[in-house]
Length: 92
Image (tube, rainbow, N blue to C red; front, side, top):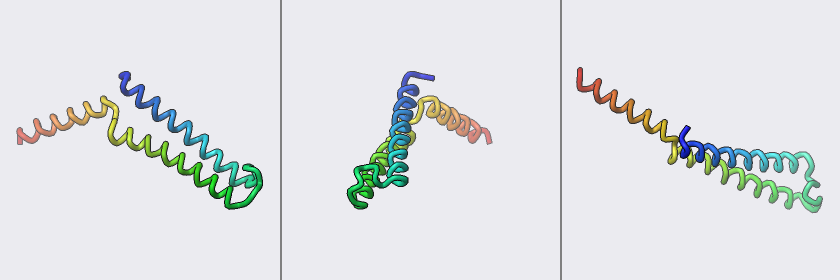
């Protein structure tokens, strides 16, 4: 695995770790609404919203890495497949 691919994978793992952490926070709020001080339900819902916003941010990062910064080995494979298709198309 190339260094670039290792960096991309490390970024994805970092994001996945944060997603797991903030999903667990939401689960805690679902199971124990008093978990944030027991004031009002609106505060619990607002806290859950904030946690979900964080999950969405990290999920977006993973999607952007996959979409725009794919591993270089995948790009080479696609280029090789395109070259084969062009070679085969000329021989017909």
